[in-house]
Every structure is written in C-alpha cells, then in structure tokens.
Amino acid sequence: MSNTRDRERDQLRLKYETELANLYEEYYDRISRYACIHIGNKNDAEDIAGEVFLRALKSLDSYQERGIPMQAWLYKIAHNMVVDYLRKKSKYKQQDIDIRLIQEEENPVEVAETKMEMEKVIVAMQKLSSDQRQVIALRFMGGLPSKEVAALMNKTDGAVREMQRAAVEKLRFLLNQDEPTPS
Image (cartoon, rainbow, N blue to C red; front, side):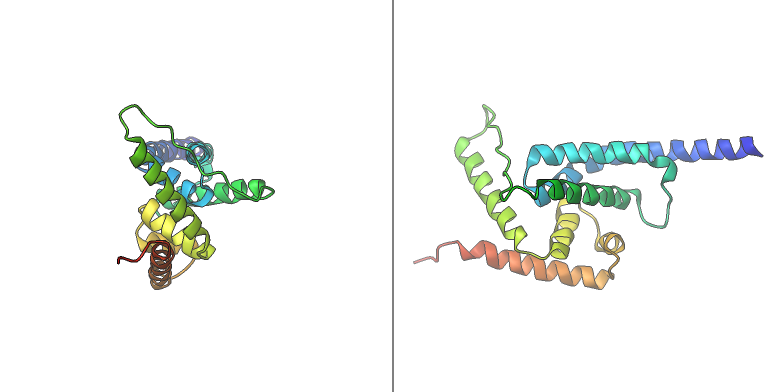
C-alpha cells in the first residue's frame, strides 16, 4: 500500500516538474514584466521571476490542483514576492527606475524615448488602485485571461473586466495629459 502511494506521489511530482519546466519557457518573461510594472526595476524583476520558479519547484510537494492552472499559482507566488520586495523597499521614498544598457546596434535616441515612455507608464500605474494595477499587470503583462485573474484575485470575471476597463481608461487619461495639443 505504501509503495503504491509513493509511486503515485512520485508520478504526480514528475508531472508537476514537467509542467513547471514548460511554464518556465513560456512564463518567465511574463512574470518578469509583471514584477517590473509593480517595482519599476527590470533587474530586480528578473531576479524575482527566477526566484518564483525556484520557490515553485521547492513547493511542488504541497501544490494541489484546484481547477486553477499552475501559471495562476506562479502569479500568486510572484505577487507575494513583489509585496515582500516593496515592503522591504518602503523605507526609501523613491524607487529606482531601471536604466537599460544600450547595445551597440540599438539607436540611443529610441532607447531614451522608450525609457521615458516606460517611466510615464510606471508613474501613471502608481495612480491606479492596487486592484487595478494587479488586473493590468496580470492581464497585459502576464497574458492571463480574465477568468484566471478573477480566480487569483477572488473576484468575479465581470468585476475583473470592469476594473480593467476603468484602469485602461484612467491610464489613457493620465498618459494623454502630458501630450501637447496640436495647433
């Protein structure tokens, strides 16, 4: 009896390890972007994304399928790590915005313009409610469907879609405020 349970447990763990390895390929960049939009630092966001997968691997024995895809579990881990990161950084008044290294083949003007646009987005995102930021990050940076976001946030699908609509509308307004009007 014990051998059967051990074999089943080992087979389940192997299944989860395989699934996690496949998700790493597809979701590492998404989770990194999700973290970056919250913390404003690309290098730290990449560290968090890597740590998310390490923690998930270490916790596979306690993972349980509950009708929610494994990637939603990864985003929950990422969310908790972002909260911990921000809590530790809260003693600083200003978050550093990541400075991107310019590669030889990149146009420095385009890199500077992209950086300025990202800074505007990060500042505008901070003016959203925490739930709106979470929805935007999970939907657009994480690429999750609204039903999965709803399950992660313990909200209804309709509530998530309404938060997304309101957040996009507010972001659009905030980002267009600074643009000069045409003459």
